[in-house]
Length: 89
Length: 219
Image (tube, rainbow over all chains, first blue to last red; front, side, top):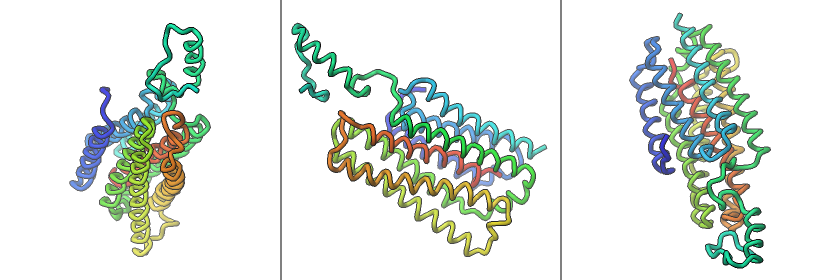
C-alpha cells in the first residue's frame, strides 16, 4: 500500500464512510445477498487498515504489532461475514 | 549539552565530540534517529489496547452470531436506529483521529501551539460524538423501547455504551494532553505521552469502524 499523507487518508476515510452510508440509505443490504455485505466489510477493512497503518503508525512499528492489529481486524470482519452467510442458509 | 533537535552535528574529525554524539544519539527518541521500526506509545497502554480489542471482538462476534438466531427481529429493530446519527458519528471520530495524528506530527517538529490546536479540534470532534450519541439514546428511551429484554437492543446498549465510555476516557486523556502540549511540555525530545494518548484515541476510532457497519448498516 502506498504511503499517503494524513489528509489524503482522512479524505479517503470520509469517502468510504459516505459509500457505506449510501449503501445503507439505498437499502442495498436488505435483500439477503452476500455481495453488498462483502463489499461493505471490504470497505470497513480498508478503513481499519488506513487507521492502523497511517494514524496508529503501525506501518513503522515492528511487524508483530502490525499483524496483531491487522489480524484482529481481518478475523473479526471474517467472522461477522461468516455469521451473515450462516443467517442466509 | 547535546541538543537532539539541533541540526548542527559535532565535527566528525573530533573523536571526543564524536563519542559524545554517539552516547547522546543512543538516548535519542527513535523518530529523531529516523528509519527505525518503533511502536508509537507506551507498551503497557498497548497491552491494554490489545485487551480492549479482544473484548470488543468477543462482543462483535457475539452480536453477529446472536443475529443468526433472530434475523427478522434484529433487522426490524435495526431499522429503528438513526443511520444519519451513526454516519455523523463516524465522520466525527475519523476527523478526530486525523486531528490527533496531525497534532502528534506537529509536536514532533516542535510546533507545540499548532499541535495544541489540532488537539482542540480532536476534542471538539469527541464532544460532537458525545452530543450526537446522547441525543440518540434520549430518542430511543423516549420511543418507549424496552432496552433490557430485547436481544438486539441489549447488544446495542452494550456495544455502543461500552464504546461511549471509551470515548469519554479518550477525551479526558486528550484534554490532559492538550493542557500539557499548550505549555510546551512535549516536543521532538519527548513525545511519548502524546503518542500514547493518540494510540488510545485511534483505537476508539478503529472500534467504531467495525461497530458502524455491523450495528447500523448490515441487514
